[in-house]
Length: 345
Figure 1 (spheres, helix red, strand yellow):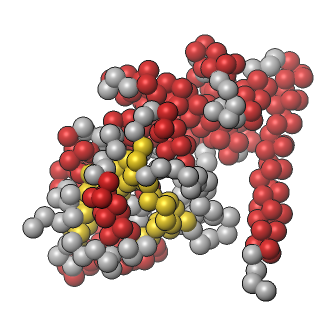
Figure 2 (tube, rainbow, N blue to C red; figure 1 turned 90 degrees about the vertical axis):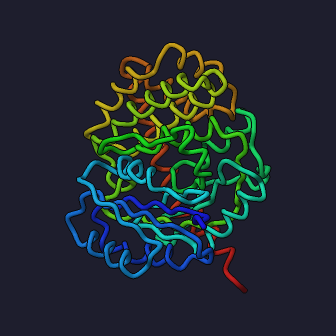
């Protein structure tokens, strides 16, 4: 009997965290799983740890390849997927022990192409994504998918029907760069007929030194290539016009978000790259799109970005300062205040 779920793990130099992840997969309450671990040319103890689990548990299979990037590693697993559903996890995070069981049940009940999950975390400064509890369980139209594109970024929040992935060739971007899951996420969401939402925190993310989340550098200029790739893909599958406004909103938001995470010395170059990447169509959208579909803070960011001269520069720096102040107030004032009022009597 084929497994109900295939869990795919792309692994590269995460030995200190790997066992916790592998144990959380091996101990799933749904026993009928296949675990595909793709060693992406690790140079630490990760391959030895993977081979150890492979020998101990027949459900584990380890594939080894030269270092090509996480997207390439995930794609390498496609040919070996046997499960009815497929879940892509990151090897430095860990899963709730009932993730596969609950996601499988939700997918079967809803006859869904995908189940979208919530995420939580246990480390300082790590919070679950904003989530609207009023989301209906099945999402169908492009407009109804707006929240899914904005609140469920990342491959670890999606539990896919395997045939849907393979038949539609919903693959990751190749190469060693961040944002390798962006095309897969957009293509999958755009083509999915039925998407269920499982409103439980079942995935635990670790923010570790040296990860893409904590080391924003010149490699994150790849966001421009990633968005171009998404746009081209939407055109190729005949879904661009349906999702144009959603895509433009997400693209403009991602450029701003990446800019605000950039080191100070890289911001001038990234600012020039943004100006080159924003099209006339995007500028019209910035002018016409209603709030809250395109938040005012994003409109203000681009308005200041394109304003020439001294006053434009000063306005832009003021927005940067306000953004940083907002982050500080949330982490140093509002979050502790909420925690204080939640303390038991």
